[in-house]
Image 1 (spheres, rainbow, N blue to C red):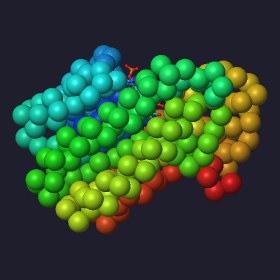
Image 2 (cartoon, rainbow, N blue to C red; image 1 turned 90 degrees about the horizontal axis):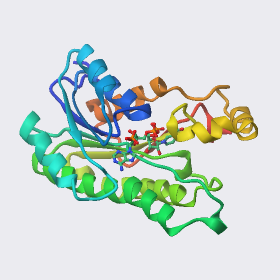
Image 3 (cartoon, helix red, strand yellow; image 1 turned 135 degrees about the horizontal axis):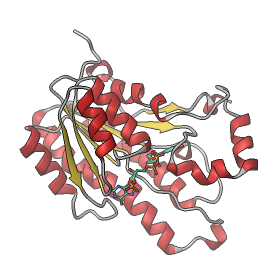
Image 4 (tube, rainbow, N blue to C red; image 1 turned 90 degrees about the vertical axis):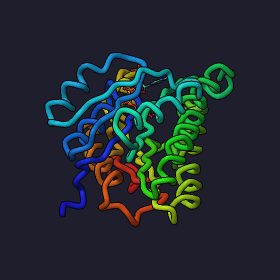
Length: 250
Ligand code: NAP
């Protein structure tokens, strides 16, 4: 028995067309999981990688800025794949402006996608998981689940909130066979950090405090997701696992 084997499991990954979500989908597929990729953009690249790993790929087009599609995502997954074993709440956005200038629109957009949809998708998936007495939910948090940051007030609020929700859901569901945990990526090379990487001063400052001496590549994230999705983590509840090149250790 390989405790990291995900054969026969179905994983829903939101925002799986690119970046960390794509890498997580590929890692879960390589561990044997059927992948249901949820998002608003074409996912052909992810499909190709998942199918190359020898497992099934299903795509659900949905805009996660509202709660409207969430129950349907869970229903369609169960209808198509028979069950929903693993949910990765990865889709997320960031808006940058000084706190004094920050708009209500930028507040709502980030909170709605990063926090509200993540909670209500967890609720919809959680109902199914609790009925079966098993399931794994992985929230993609951030270093801003621990730290304040600058110029990203709604993002910090959303990711700090997501860490809190991870703990709350773990407390409610741990005894009922459902593991809820989070991964806090450090600074990774994706669309999310493009503006930071294009700013030479911020980019150098960030790099200088990463003990590993480099930014994360999307392929650095998958191992943590496989761990938290697999039976290897059956007694792990409510943690926020940093995958950050040592940033928080500094
Ligand atoms: P990314 O490349 O910008 O990916 C974000 C993903 O979320 C994309 O698939 C995007 O789809 C999807 N998404 C955004 N809004 C959506 C909506 N309304 N409906 C459906 N899908 C939506 O950035 P990433 O770095 O991979 O981000 C993935 C997660 O990691 C996010 O939660 C982010 O906050 C978190 N994170 C990233 C870092 C980092 O350093 N990169 C660090 C900490 C945490 P589209 O392509 O269609 O927009």
